[in-house]
Length: 452
Image 1: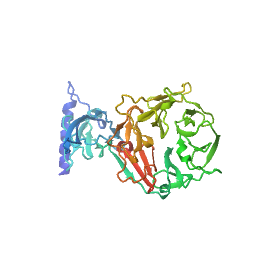
Image 2 (image 1 turned 120 degrees about the horizontal axis):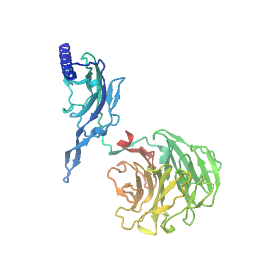
Image 3 (image 1 turned 45 degrees about the vertical axis):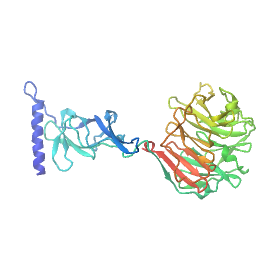
Image 4 (image 1 turned 180 degrees about the vertical axis):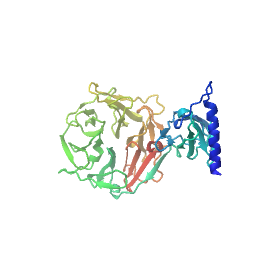
């Protein structure tokens, strides 16, 4: 029966090609090669879940113009597929597509359940909920090429955020305070263990290595608080001595400095510190020389405690970072004070200055938070902190520190069991890493779309 079906289809293809290729003088040109040269999707239906005002689940339909999703055609293995999957909820069982062929070859689609073949037309929908076999016949009616067409659709919500708990770490559990950062592909956690700063590193959150610094002077209990990372090094203030390392074990002494009382942050090529009387300082040579950094408002509006900073690339400009600093100040009892700096590193760039993000009239100001941590994530900044000894909402700023909103997708893990003063958080760009110092908890959180 299979041979009869295929033979009948071949005869029909020959008849169609013969009638289509006749010219005005009844001459026909036949080709013996065949290929699919293009594959484009049309407008597709998408079904999404929502919740009604009454709290009931509901589904609504929308449409997606899918022509922008590129399909690769592997002419060696004869596979057609989209490397970027279509959004969750696309109905792949009813797909309208446009298929281009070489020399006007005729396309047929093999049935899902048997060997029968159906002529392709651009107006009919095709079920691509699973890979389909397509054939393109040459105009001689005898030769054809088989292709497998795969229409990939995401099976999870790209904007959904979830946490995964890694193995607990007893060494982290012993820390009475901690700070985390990322350098390259490694995550570092420094903290106070019995009056001395110690450090640990990992690449996956499960396997940890204890750092063994090659320094003669023990690290003070509070040195972990003054530890920051730039593009290629970690810097730490140990008393008055500024240290630098690229791996957490081999440390170099930059030298003693009285120019700053505390080290508070870094961009790719700048270090930031505070003097004892709360003046903002900057070093552009790795901590050797310090000078007052420019600010556009009163120094009384600089944060005093806590002081949190973060840095991330400015996508619209080369060699440029956004640096955001936030914390509490007695000059503003209603909200946190937030400052932003654009740090440019091109040869002819002028030094940037810190700009105060005015809170007056801002409906979405960052509230005052204790134990504040700023984490860059998904082209935004997340603020994690506590109020009255309890973790509160995670606030998100998508405009580089101007407005801060609660984002329902970002919540701390329900099982996160830790003291509010014994935690740390950082990001490697794809994941948010969260560490707790009571049970040594390690959590990895991510948006689905950043891991695709």
